[in-house]
Image 1 (cartoon, rainbow, N blue to C red):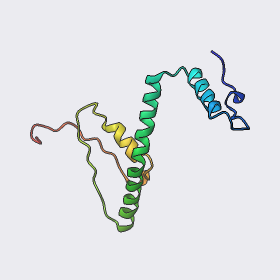
Image 2 (cartoon, rainbow, N blue to C red):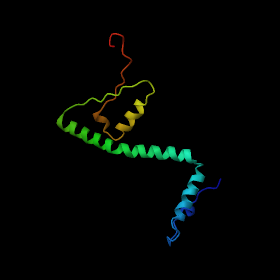
Image 3 (cartoon, rainbow, N blue to C red):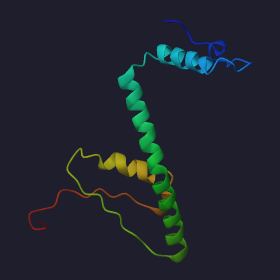
Image 4 (tube, one colour):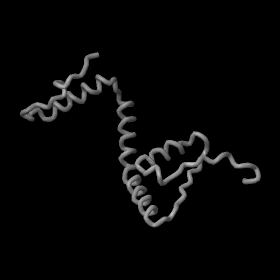
Length: 115
């Protein structure tokens, strides 16, 4: 497999190639990293999910700031079966929040009396 050099992805100076320079760069990148349609689709899906999440993360940061200023508190509860993705969701949601102002507490399985 050939290594990808900077010269492979340098756009042409005359810009009359109709985007072929970018296509060559893209093709070289795909070849270098051994990507197939399945991998590209997975990468793009993850990227799009992250982009969709950003406005909600920003709103949560604003809410956290408001709660801090007003001295109020809030509880967000995630409930689900084991391996349902709760941990990953919590990490993605709280990624940009100030760690000083929230706690994550894992609750154990409820007892028979609690049910």
